[in-house]
Length: 234
Figure 1: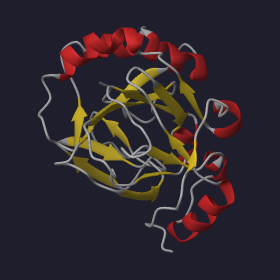
Figure 2: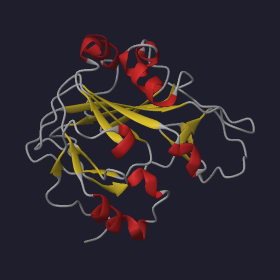
Figure 3: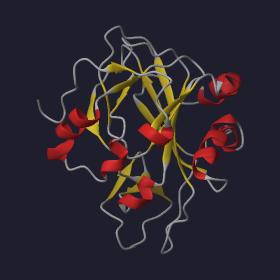
């Protein structure tokens, strides 16, 4: 099996996963009351686009700051936690993709500035991305806010619990790392939030029974960037 193949079958995730022990936790119904406001804000995003990177979307930032979503990040990282990147994933029968096992390794900044340990640099959807030192990623969390149901047949996120503690995992070592940590499937209902350590190994299969599966994914950090670099934010 190559490192881009998905394991069979994934283990069904339950509420027994914790951020402290496993690097991921399900916050059942934490964003339910915010769903109408999120739906209204995200209606401005293009339809049938697999992933839309969000910045300066009117009305979004307040919903990610002090409301239930931001509160979960602050509980994990402390009061300085701020949303530093947001992406809307919209998987459907028209955008039914698979993604092999990997770690998220980039952040988004306002402008390029040379700083030790930062690089390589890329531009995605007009936004400046860079790979930071791994220890910065290790201090971040990612929240996935679910707008639609995600049962086992609708491409739940797959995670390897505890893999965030392995540091930067080389491509050649991913298969062994997933085998060692095992696999959990992040099933969800609308309004649920999955929170996980940003460097955790994760993947997604194609939906077996495609249905719309929108997920608002937000990265949070409590760090200030060095050497003139600034978070782009949301």
